[in-house]
Image (cartoon, rainbow, N blue to C red; front, top):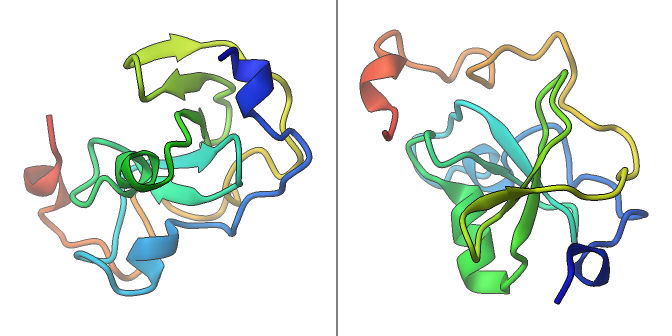
Length: 118
């Protein structure tokens, strides 16, 4: 299957932050955000404590995620663990620029670097 067969460019992102972290799953904060290119689900990256974007792939089979960070326009294929090229997705293309990284504001521990995954 090619990326163009598995992506829905018209689906907007599910929100401005990791769906699961904001709902109370895990420690409730993320390092960077990823957007499912098929359904728009926003999850946290593999460096984040909970790795919700990868968990979304594992449960949904949606293999292509796009960065949801300002200034980044790349895609990741979770099935093959490689960077791939994909189409432009529906806006917004990143979380709000006033949202801190890591985020969300007020939920990130002072020693957050110690909690990142390699």
